[in-house]
Amino acid sequence: MKKNIIISLLLISILFMGYSCTSTHLIKEWKNPTIDTLYVSKILIVGMTSNLEARKKFEKLLKKEYEAKGIEAVMSLELFDPSFTTEKKSPAELKAIENQLTSNFFDAVLFTKVVGVEDKVDYSITYKDEKYLDIKFKEDYYSNQEIYYNPKYYSKYKVYHAETSLYCICSTKDRELIWKGYIDIIDPTSIGETVNDYINLLLLTLENQNLIYPLN
Image (cartoon, rainbow, N blue to C red):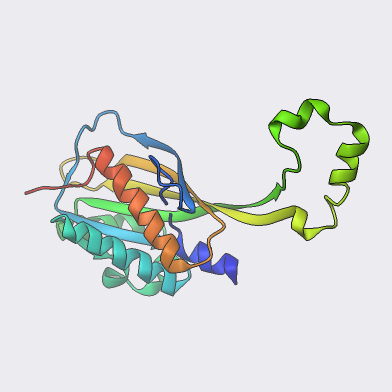
């Protein structure tokens, strides 16, 4: 259930630049070196997941944030059937979708998906750094012999690796990748909180990269 909830949301964080209470982290990003500032008039927001609730929360909140900045934003759920992100598309179908977007004056697409899930285990620390030199074998073994069968000795959690890509679909140039960011979601417990954290981090990063400005 928990796995479905998170993969549902695709999205991602903000332990970025000092926000230590978040469950999301920007791992790395790439920006097209030919782009300094991106001005957008109308953007399509796509959350790729089969979980309709999470997709709706993500797309709706991100739409609200873009509109607050003066940019027209459209959810994929408003433009396409809910099965849009769960059914395979041929190259011809995707080309037709691109043409549909340009004919309706879209100039950008923001596409988010979960690309992997990893199990993690953290073990408790029984000694402080300053005591390491004084540890004897018997003390070390005695203090750590519960490592495999005492559930209090370690904690298990999941890390969801998410990816967001920003594409230009301007009619005057090729469809090109403008920015891509990789965000880790650490042991999420709530769709709402995780979506909030992800979007906060995403918008902060795009602003820092000059990629979220209205055309007018």
